[in-house]
Length: 281
Image (tube, one colour):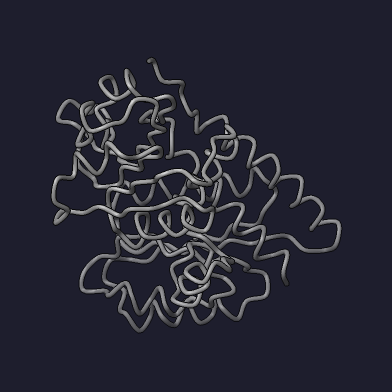
């Protein structure tokens, strides 16, 4: 079997076009969705990510305001900025770019963002809503995974899903989303015995461990749908995923590439969350 590609660029384009249309409808009502980004420090990758998010906002007709703070900014000053943004009616979504430089503590800062403006879906209120099956804002990467499965009409109900990775950003929320769609879900991690055998049971396999080519061909069931969340830069500069693409693609029915798979979906879903936040004002 030779897997078909799940093209994140194609799906992201469709999501953004839908967002653009709904933004125009909001603007006709006098509402222009606004996203504020908070970037602390000089991490080059973070600056690239934030610029991409701001540019996409503008492309879709949304308002974007960037707050770039020096690495020496205190916890108190960051929290004061979050408080101002929470009270700003022109801002519907607040994104705090991670990682934050030390000694800043991310949890108090993320939890200070109003749940109504938490477009990253990381506030405990929104995490709780997701757990209860009443999601409002879903973390962007897991939401993007579900959007890709739906775009390609890949069945979820009744399927066996295995998620390798238990992070709060990807592993746990995508497991909840799959569970709410009536998949039977197993979450695997570093303490899982006989990981390969568990993975071989999966109709849908999500790899989110941050280890290059961790999922090998012999770990995958014939005909499985494989979602590779990993982005790992090799010594030669090449980006590879958590999945050994060539070996796994020979067995899977569908697979996401790296790059061009899950990655493009993250910004698209951030835009969707921002538009949804504005829709409820």
